[in-house]
Amino acid sequence: MSSSKKSSAGSVGDLSARRERPTRSGAESVMPYDESESKGKQVETMFDSIAPAYDLMNTIMSLGMCVRWRNRALDMAARIMDASPRSILDVATGTGDVAFALHARYPEARISGIDLSEGMLRIAREKSKEIQGSENIEFRQGDSLAIGYADASFDLVTVAYGVRNFENLEKGYSEMLRVLRPGGVICVVELSMPASALPLLFYKAYTRGVIPLAGRIVSGDPRAYSYLHESIEAAPQRDAMTSIMSRAGFVGAEWKSLIPGVVTIYTARRP
Image (cartoon, rainbow, N blue to C red; front, side, top):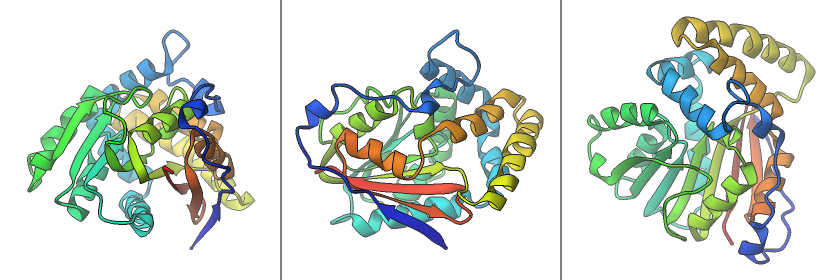
């Protein structure tokens, strides 16, 4: 079961004008550690720190549901694409699981995964050695706010659990819009807050208590998993997120929350 809504996006307008004055969301002020460095640098340090435990923690935190959530998101993206993508960019690729899932669906596509954390990318590259046809997959260190690819390079852009870590969310969306071809699709999967009172109560107890404790035991970095719930709670969600996507220049932005609302999938197109 799920709930969903389509954004009432405005007119297309001039894409460069939409990128002139990106606004900031609450999550951008939530830092992994302190105020001594930029958020981007702290996110890089944090994921380098937890990289060895990242895949295990994802399974623990999601109670094993992370693969199902990812597949639901890719199903949604497939339904709105005009044809199978020939080139795909996975932003905040982490240890590469979304890139590998995309490769399994579209083995002929060229897939590029970028991430701030070289520690995460090292694991992705090691995992790729076990993937048949992995010569079609590349991983490189890169910043979502300055994506190192030419305009209109990709048919599909994906982001799984990464946009709330962006130092400037609207600027990140503007960059992803830039590298999409006209008519190309963006698909974002992000953790979210349940909308109903009882699930929200259990959610807060779990994310504020159980997850930081598990993070301390498994990864040795409890602050990283305290940052997790803080950034989720501060991030724009559902209509607020699709509004940012529309301001960045996307059209047809819509969201679907998976029951009990702890994950929301967003899709949109470049005009």
